[in-house]
Amino acid sequence: MTIAKKVETIIEKSSWIRKMFTEGARLKAEHGAENVFDFSLGNPNLPPPSQFSEALKDTVNTSGPVDHRYMPNTGFPQVCAVIAETVSAEQQAAVTGQEIIMTVGAAGALNVTLKAILDPGDEVISPAPCFVEYHFYTDNHGGVFKTAACRADHTLNLNALEEAITGRTKAVLINSPNNPTGQVYSAESLAQLGQLLRDKSTQYGRTIYLISDEPYRRIIFDGLQVPAIFPHYEDSIIATSYSKDLSIPGERIGYVAVNPKAAHRRQLLDGMALANRILGFVNAPALMQRVVARVQGASVDSSAYQRKRDLLCAGLADAGYEFVTPPGAFYLFPRTPIADDVAFVKELQQELILTVPGSGFHGPGHFRISFCVEDETITRALPGFKKVMQRYT
Picture 1 (tube, helix red, strand yellow):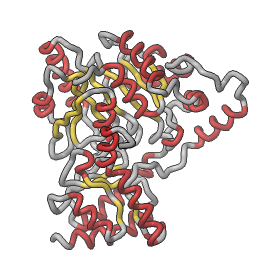
Picture 2 (cartoon, rainbow, N blue to C red):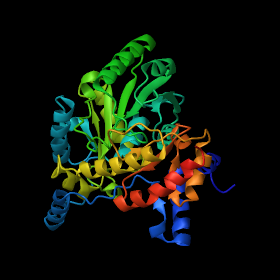
Picture 3 (cartoon, rainbow, N blue to C red):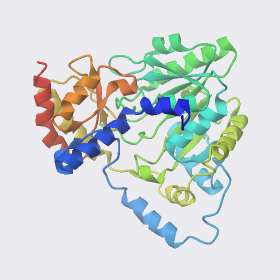
Picture 4 (cartoon, rainbow, N blue to C red):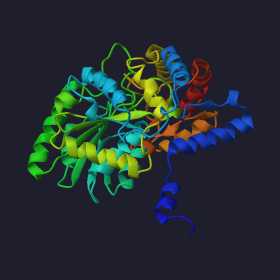
């Protein structure tokens, strides 16, 4: 044995998203990239907004000799203060720079949060379907990951969440707009969830945190607004990044925001700052911190993703697929016409269409389509989607 048994097991059960990415590389080499329709990876295909490019150039050109050195583990104080103003407006709360920790993307934000709050055996519950890596993040820090099934339309099922909470539950982890469904949880359901967590925290005599993973907050359609979390529950934490709204996933920049009304706010923030260092992040990238501070409020034009969504939904509906039209993010999560979603995804591969089985997201009987692709990729793939569906109708 050359590597840890645990890591070896994880590799064997590795992310379906990455498996499809690898399969895509093989098919592209065999058939030509232009003939393979790759909907497997949520990799933004829109360019960053012009404000970002301009801020990046100016930040580089004006950098001084000390601008690339270490800073506090939590990030540049002036950057945290600027971001706190944005979070305050979004969350209807008086957030200061002291409640912000700059992180290496949303993944870094989630890992430092879980490292700070979890004792061995503590449970983290997520509504399902959910992002595949949540299980690994929780396990990284000694926790036990559990899911609670959403309703058929992918909205929160409070009864299922209530049944899942036990005396070992330390956090409920939500993602809205959701990956893989694109669903946005309503303010009413978040208020109900907040009350549920208050009641359960009292019942079990321990704080149960609400962690909201929000990298798709600004990728929303049809004039919808994503509700704030902080007004609905005091012990709440936001983990997010600029990967999707600025189309810069490779730059790995995000932050954690802690509700200023959290009961153990200071301890929580101190724990996250420590975790940022001991997990090897040390601090978020210095250059990107300074850039994003200058482009608060900027975002890609989500109407471009809405156009892609509508194009895909119209074509799949015509072909007989069943799905909930996503109000946000850039994913569609249709039902498979057979119970075995893995087998169905393999059928799509025969038409050189790459998607991801819903089982990888704790959503069996579905498959995920990432529509952050060129419009032509969607239109050229639709005949293949239809051809495969016709085998089952």
